[in-house]
Image 1 (spheres, rainbow, N blue to C red):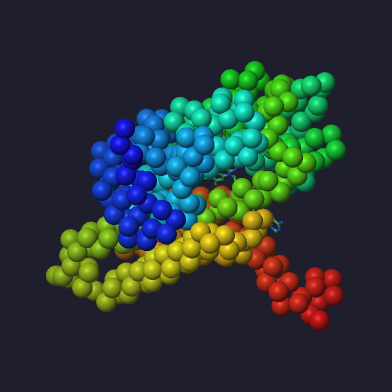
Image 2 (cartoon, rainbow, N blue to C red):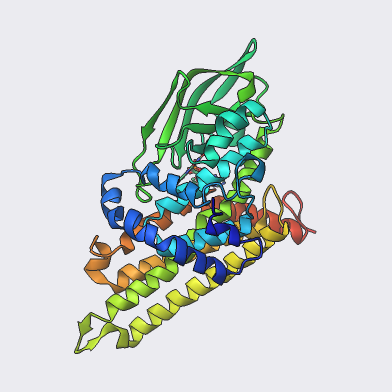
Length: 396
Ligand SMILES: Cc1cc2nc3c(=O)[nH]c(=O)nc-3n(C[C@H](O)[C@H](O)[C@H](O)COP(=O)(O)OP(=O)(O)OC[C@H]3O[C@@H](n4cnc5c(N)ncnc54)[C@H](O)[C@@H]3O)c2cc1C
């Protein structure tokens, strides 16, 4: 069998090489299978079809980040980030890269348990796109106050609680779940949708409506010991996962921002006001210039952060560069999206044009993958520590 074209990419592929790969291998797939129904799916709050992820598995996208010994591509996180960026340009439904990034990353959490039974039952099928997994972390309290509890009963674990929101939960077969035990330590457990006591309900949101967002309910879910994924420090595992995933949330934004500018300019050229196209009005040119500055700086920030990830030059638990990139790219995307709507009048505000849908998708990152305000606090604390500020004693 011929190796998929994605194997030509490597850890130092340039952004342009990755763009060419996405254009030649995936553009037609998005144009025929994903984009035509994007608006309707959004209106119906219907998840991107499962077949899309089977296709992603066939071309080597879904298993790109997975190790080779379990059927993965062993690809680099840096190059995967670039893939997401360019998918964001060609794919009109931002839910697809959001779900893809989740489904591609969760198998690695299970893989790290090294349990042969879990590799066979879950990780191998995930590499083939036959099973999908998501991350059920967010709870009705802080990490130290999670309401979801796990209790040991003889050789079993019994789980009870509700997990607030999961990307791609509607299609997920597996939920990597976090709960507090009797000693208030955090445990990471693998929950199968077919386990008795497991149920999900759809959660309707402002944007990313086709991302299959769910709430997970666990009622006396009884799990064998092998389903425990973590060592004693489940919180550190969760922080490591969140830290390294944070970047993937905004990668597609950068591609989408570029697309929005292009669509916006093409549209503005057809709108005649006072006898000339809007593209000739200086205020409009200034708006477009501002949008371009936001896209170009976001691209530069993204590539720098991805290169650092590629070099392993990051803090695994909380990396200031990754967090700053997520923060600033989100703010830039929102400002750019708002300007696109401003410039395109009633059409931009309506479903005649895709800008309001992109804008709503960008808003997900205001809270998703750590709320922007909380990132600012964390970055502020790290920055003050660097300049010698001690919160108790003030400036030294
Ligand atoms: C589209 C989308 C997809 C998601 N997918 C997943 C998923 O797959 N899995 C998952 O587990 N979760 C998921 N989430 C949930 C997401 O991780 C949480 O929304 C996020 O961590 C913020 O938690 P919260 O919503 O409880 O907000 P809160 O923690 O309540 O924060 C809300 C606001 O409260 C204030 N605040 C909070 N803490 C502090 C503080 N310490 N000091 C000062 N002010 C504070 C800030 O203003 C903050 O913006 C998703 C969310 C979205 C929007």
